[in-house]
Length: 188
Length: 107
Image (cartoon, rainbow over all chains, first blue to last red; front, side, top):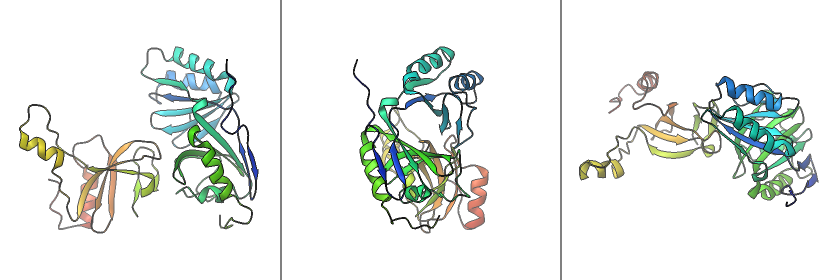
């Protein structure tokens, strides 16, 4: 069995804010009818989190549930648990039209922490990131620079960002440049 | 710069988050149709100066297709609506008529 490694092995940068590559993170892409009771129950039993509203993420004891599109969720669980959770979901939804796939190794995840985290993301994403418009539990799928990415807030100074693994190193470098000491406009 | 509201995820986002998909409400002609109709379906576009109905995809967001009504001359967006329809809904038509009283209507 090969040893699993994350895209940058937990790389870290400290500038105006702190940027950390999150390491191995279990991620499951789940598509199906999000209004379906069986799907909702399966998601809650896998993560302990409630079903998220549109463009929201919910936090549970054993995972997080992110709204990705009207028929897609991203489940965040421990890396080691991901395959078992996919098996449970597939069993629970066996007679429903759905897709559950372990995409942990296809994605990269970064954590942005610091008072300026909003401004770092706002340099590249066409999103209103003011505290009035974007708060804890809010999620956006959008672009950062030219890259497709999704991000959400876990607390008042922390964002988590996911993107495709193939562009993970580029996004990390991009974020590090955007977070250079003294480069934030201090507007938000 | 256009700002469009994605009807699927409710986000009001700017143009760079979307991908344009050409004219909306095309009537499709497939196998068995005559060559003239098929050619028109493939290549014939209205390309108007003024009110235009377009397909867009929220490419960097939820990934869903939707339709938008906008003016090609002023870039004013009259509204966006679900792609699961063959003609613009009444509220979109009303919004266009309010802004463009001289508009000849859809089709």
